[in-house]
Length: 214
Figure (cartoon, one colour):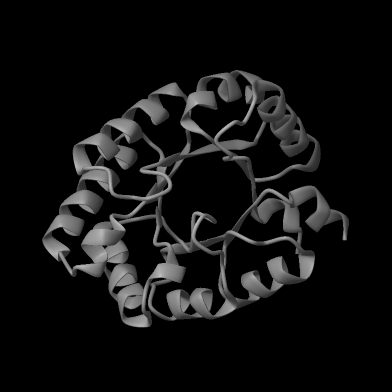
């Protein structure tokens, strides 16, 4: 297994500087990481930096709370892809999920999936599993699958990180066609490999260099 190919090399802190983002990109190029995951503000410059390489560009929408109204999320998706993003990591409306407002969520996910796919990109839906019950995770997985999401993602890393248990639960309730991204608190090669074994297809981390050097 080549762990590099599983990694979204990530820098999403609020004060991420241009120098830090350019360094992130160079590290991704040098180590053949699958993608970088950066704030929307930096997508255009990252596209220029990564031109001619195989490294994909991911960015975040509705981050980190998820409670932006659907039209705002759709506009974020559209702009990010138009500026160069290949993948969108969108936080689901956690409040709507906790309130079991499935009509709201169906509209949000249908709209986002249609927008993202129309522009040739992929959608990863962030559940924030540390805030959800097992039943809510199962319900969210089914909805993401039904609405055509490409990935379901464990966490933003703001309210807790990926756990083996959450990934196993997600994998048991998703078809093989829907992939899983584990993110948040992944700081060792051992944990990364455990999450992949549990069912993760992608790993989002900021400690990527440490992980692959272990």
